[in-house]
Length: 469
Image (cartoon, rainbow, N blue to C red):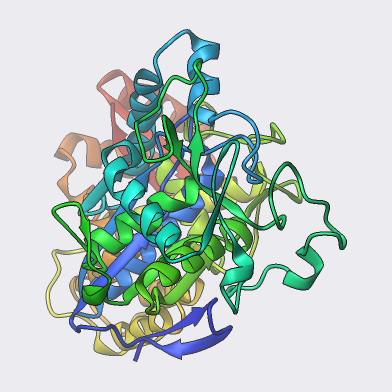
């Protein structure tokens, strides 16, 4: 039985999809105005582990991810310029060129981290007609008001806001602790559609003149269209709308973005929007949130420049529960690298997989089904590796099955040492004998000889890993 921590109910609940074995997941994707960093990577690794766990349990997953290429303003208070346009002006490029460049980098990061690509990738600029339609629906229902700069959702018209918490609404009312900016009635009111000036680079015609969508409306449109069955041929059908199984994102989206998604979606359809809301915690760096605004972030390429592989970072993320903050330091990454190298070395001499070890597989399943307790699942994998109760062929079968969730590409390393050329195996064996005898100079001579013929050695506490150049 799979249980998940639901932000909506603030409880750990048994997972029961609307239409089993089908499961729909909406994952908040990136705003492609700059390079993605490893703080983002941790959020997408969490979503990937969720997806893999569901598939491991026999569910058929359809995952939708948005790509925000318009509408995300510099401020969550609907102030400032669009982030894409700011980047475009700075670089002297078009918004489309900027978005495509950084989106390509984003997908490359996910590929290197062995994160499965969603079935549906939805770009905001491809859904402008549906966003206008949904905004008009909300306007016709009386949930909006118009200002000189756009169409805003009036949160006072929707009881129960904010459903995910994050703040007390009474403290956000006009004239209390938070001042109203511009023509807003209440500080939490948010833009559904923004009116564009002559200099704005991305704008579309609408019932309210030339403009562009607010940030939040895109996710409601894309999720309701692809998972909620509420759009057909550009028309909105609230009577057909169905509740979406899972929505994922980072904890920083709870207070504003996800609360706004809920209120506008449920106001439009008159039905519950999402059943399970799951949020991944921050990646910290030296105790502070990793963020572009703080200029304390690292890209995956920064890690690679210091000799780490992308999957070293994935391994690090596996060691901490997705709802727990992970403090990134170089020593912590080195420890993850060492453990991952030891794992690969350990299985490099194993036999081909046969029938697995049922007890370990059961324990692994219990761990991942316990709100994605991946650290415990990883511990079970290590117990399997170290045990003497199963043959290496049996352990190999079970470990590869576990790796369907872990995503560490262990198949690439299984039995690798047994596949080395005989001359290399003999040199490696001779070097190990010399090392054990303390004959370091002679052992280093063999290392150099192996490097000349194209093989790199990596010495770890668990043995020596061999890589072909």
